[in-house]
Amino acid sequence: MEVPAKSEPATVWERIGCSKKTLEFIKMSLEDGVIDAKERAMLVRQVEADGIDPQEFDFVLTKALEAYHKMAKNVIHELSNFFKLAENMATGVVKPNQKSLTEKLPATMAKTNPYMIGSMVAVETISSTIGTFIKAPSKLNTFKAEYIRIIDIPLLPEVLVDFFCYAESQVKEEKQRNSGKGVFAKWSEALFGKDIDLVPIWMEKMTHVMTKAVIRHGNHPEVMSLIEKWRVSPLKKLKGITDSHQIENFPIPQNASDYIDLVKYSYEKGESVKTIHREAFAQLNARLLKESSKFVSVHPSVGEVIRQNRVKMVNIVMSNCDNPVFMVQLMTPEDLTDLLEVLHFLSTRKDLKKHHQRIYEEGLAAFDADPDAKNKIQQFKPKNIFGF
Image (cartoon, rainbow, N blue to C red; front, side):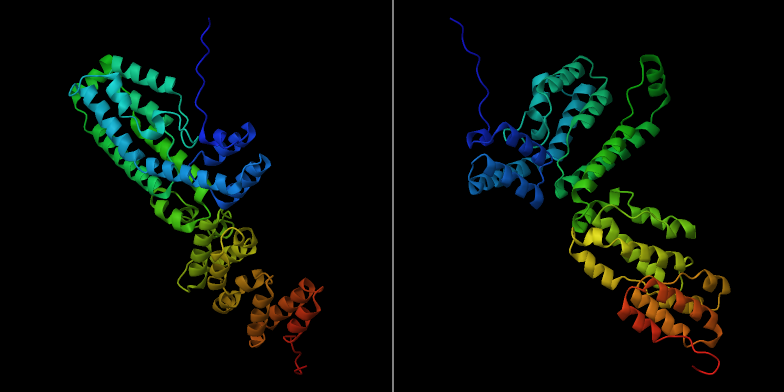
């Protein structure tokens, strides 16, 4: 009589009646251990289609996330302990043993998570990698590199900070170790082969994790501020530019956090009379504000940021009105408030009458379809030599 194969125990999702299609949605949504309101709403609609009570599902979802977050918070500490044990095995302090090393694996890597959250690393791959290292402990860095590539860092804010701090410390240690090698070590490497350099491995991992973090948390300035130290943000790039054309045409960021940073910085520079490329920063500020509608819906504070960090074009004109080149190149403001303020200033300067006339005519043409705006503009109609 043939013994039937032992089936895998049902997951908590299967026990409450989730279909295979729903299971795939759950797996994709919870892969990084973070779920936003839109993803939660989508999952609720999906389980309702399966005939599952949304409140029951929400309860299970909340408990699953709590369990995963509790486990994930220790992942960097566990990874550090895992590598320390491997180092002791490589140096002969501890006898190489596959079982003891497997037991030290970070919880997110040790086995498939029953809630289908987080890293889904195959047990066979892990066992094979550990087995290879046990046979050749001298290849410590090769072993570490494999695990650095494999491990999936949970995108929880506190875990991200722990990871970047740890990775940065490892990069520093590796650089010191590489620069401190003596003649014997270099001779040994030349004779028996050099182990892999972990510096680029860690740097590549940091870049990969940061990319995922920005995609996930880019619209949350409070989270992004926590990891700003380790990121080459658009703001950092902008601060390094000294060409006015590049400043004026700097790319618009894709997320609310970076957008807010650039709006504030361009306002600060555009309003300051000490700024070398003040006009360029003012133009950048104006371009950023035109794109505000893309970000207001994803982050409520964007509206307030815009109101408080809007460079007034009239201030730029007032500080450059004696520069003929600037006045000739001055573009007619597209914003009605800016236009009216500039026209009001030009109307007070007899020596700027030519520019007043041009801006007035271009402004009327731009707002030709808006009678109310035209009436406001016409209040600043240039006067002839007789005062009419």
